[in-house]
Image (tube, rainbow, N blue to C red):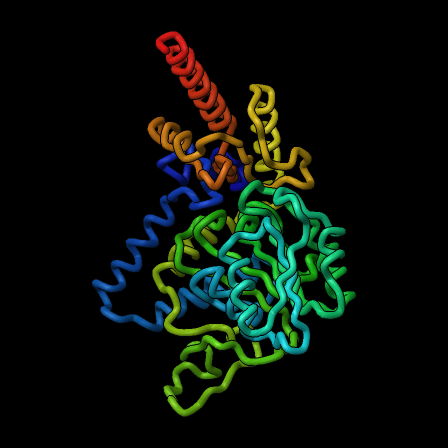
Length: 389
């Protein structure tokens, strides 16, 4: 019964007194992650500088992420963050041949701003969709022509959990000769992801959110056999065919995804990433997705029935693992909830309530009741102000 949500939840001791609804920002702390941090501390104390042991942790994380998305280890580069991964891709493209890059207002700024920065090298940035809340394949189709080099689309949007039709967009892009970059940070760990089915050329995700690790490590999938228009601009000793040759006069790029790697890898975060994989690998990913979908659907219904405005899609197919609650001051609401040990993630005009396999209906009870109390308190203060004015 390793797939049982209650057994999974038991591996996160803090959930005994805390409601964690912020996996879209940082996953909850597990006992396994706490132990992994002790492991690297012990390796420093006991062995001083065990680089073979540390690089083995990095390679293991690479291999496990590759399996998680249906790729091979040679198709995955280990980097520090999604911005770095996006830059490595952008810098390897020749914008003089095809200048267009298509993005969306639903893109996480850290990704979109990398594309904007490429304008200095001649890139022409086009935005698909125009309402900032949803985008469909037609919105992308209107922007993709023979001048487009790269199409960037999130698998699940950071702001409201919306899930664009990535496979259809990828098919359109490839028909018109463009490459496809997918930001899967808000999906991998709770939604099944198969790069072969998606048909993308690049995909990035990292460990700190639904993969239950820590910041500092990201994984860039690069489709095997993909030709490279130019070498990446950022490089380092781990971006060599043999990093341990220590030859300062040689700049040789591997033929696989490791060509996008740079300097010394993020060893502590690799330990954390492996701790997350220890927890997630035994699970049935379809069952995880079903559990999370049921919770997000039920939370959406409860909030709407209570009169709240929700900015997330209401249909299962278009909704990711979070519910975006619209509020005048999401930061203030998040602070109020935090004092009641309900952890959330405000962004812009919404308070994001994100669900993982460790969440259950008691969490939904707690947050809906707390939001109701917050509204009642606000209404009481408003009424008092009117009586005393």
